[in-house]
Picture (tube, rainbow, N blue to C red):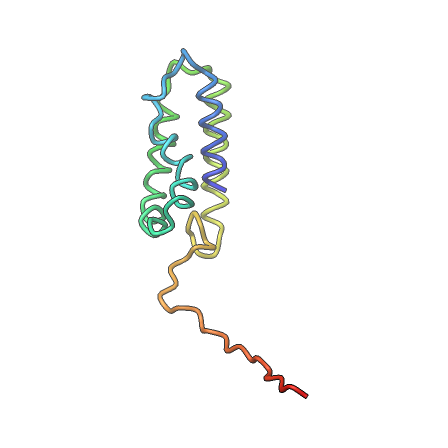
Length: 120
């Protein structure tokens, strides 16, 4: 959910050019790209997820610091970020991606039963 919100906010900010430039909200861009980075390199999921809360907090600070941005757009972006943080903190695991929680034990392997058919 946070990645989706960050992506929506990135689009809002991109459409606000020339009032703001991408250099003004790099953390939002990084947060929005987390899903793609995990999908394209699943081995990075653990490190991406570990870094995401700090990245998301930095994105919120960047949005709050965009003084050239229209006040309504800034309020909308801040509201989207705050909603995403509230939803995340209400999850049972307090993680941005609870479905990808740290699973140190591999899933048990299922034994497959294949019947042997004899020629009649």
